[in-house]
Length: 293
View (cartoon, rainbow, N blue to C red):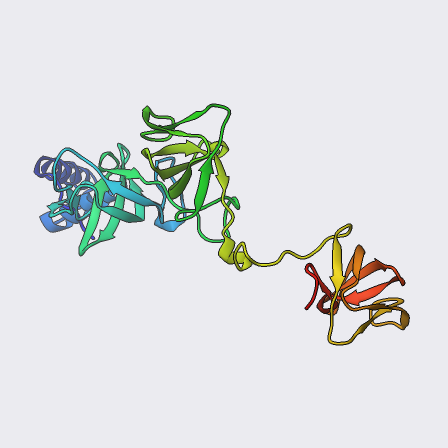
């Protein structure tokens, strides 16, 4: 995309090109001189489109927020080029390309029907949420957590490492609104009864989602040392020498036994129990935490 050339620069370039050609014995048209001047100016623009990166705040693919003192942000058809209509301040955009004209960085954006270049002064990097399966396995937006720490009141900051916006009691339930990485530290913007604010990961404890395990009313599997009762459809329950093995002993249905060991076999859970009639293995279907009817 060709950008506009300042008039004084064009005149100066034409004179230089004409002088150089005159000294070399070459005669060129004004159009050719303009073309060469344009190529010379464009050679100063280095783009990251070839895979290069710059030390700027944003890189290709990053999300940014348009900032500035005006409601509409200046957009250009090329780095240093012609001014065109721009989007509103505060618009979130994705960087399509980065260029350096030797003086400052430029970012090409495409959003809400607008496409063009903004200067580095008119765009700021925004906090990004980690993609599912990436980064730390900590909580994400929408998750519920509790505030934790050594103090009774936890500070909620206006921004990461910023001023205090509000305070909330330790142990209060909060909802995570946003996650942000800063200098290797994870910050969370949370919604609390006392207001919104940012806290570090050390001030959050994850609240387990009961729906993921079927709810808190779901019966927990017994562990070794627990006492349970033999269950089943028959009056006597077989105790096996090993899972799927021969019968070692029998015990009455409803008898209380102690779990000695658990074992997973082909997707089934087996329990080695100590009963009044001896030890043996039974399937999980043959034990109950309550006396069977």
